[in-house]
Amino acid sequence: MRKFVIGCFMIISAISCSKEKLYSDLDHLKGEGVIQIGTNNVDGVIGEIFSKYSYVTAPNGGRVIILGTSGVTEEQMLYAKDILKQYLTIKGEVYGTKKYVANSMANKRCAIVFWDSEQQYEDNISRVSMIGYNVQDLYATESIGSSNRDASYEEILHLVHNYGIAPTAPLFQEALQKANDDAMNSGLWSPWSNDLPKADFEDEYFAALMDCYLGLWKHHNSTMDGAYKPSSKEEMKQQDPVGYKLIRDMFGDIAPVR
Image 1 (cartoon, rainbow, N blue to C red):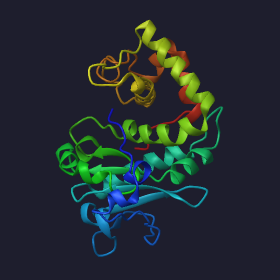
Image 2: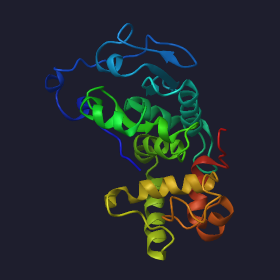
Image 3: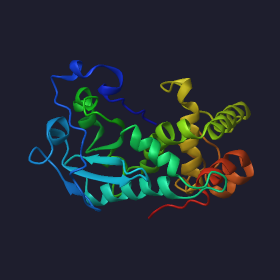
Image 4: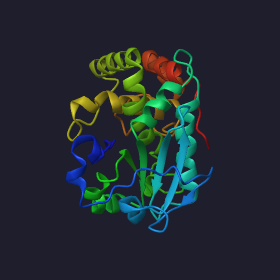
């Protein structure tokens, strides 16, 4: 449910960022697994904060990356990569290939920023905006291997949606917005409005659809702690056929990677 952070190079001049040396060209690092990084092989803020790096290569040759801190396990890094790769390659029933989505994200310099914990993120938030990427944060305490809810699919989808799907599939985005509004009006979807901007409602609705379709809340009575009434793909198909179709249109019969 957290929103992404826009790298400073997107909103202010490089001069304003001069106190922190940016390092956003990681193309010299190559490998299919998790690459160990630090000040020895990456300059600036990224090398100082992060110790793990992985990436998915887009069709245009660019990269959508994952940066991890020391407490994030290699298993968690690879799990995030598997989810990201799935989102960027799986074919939908209407929208088919994800080439346009992956290329958009690579062009916009997108990154999953994987922290040990929320506290570590809070301690470093002022420096996160200096790394030169558009990012979505994720915590090791909410990923595979944690005793807490696995929010990996939700958070990674936010990045894919905002920088890949929304800019390149306007008809889908229009349909998603209408489905969100209709679901709210019917009481099927009740976003937690106390701390969530109205502009983010459809983003969270999309994530709720995905979590529900994947069966991540099947042992509960609803999805997202009651925000979305269905708790399984089958219930979703009956209660929210429009939302069900949106997932199929974009991602086909997607299933959890593990």
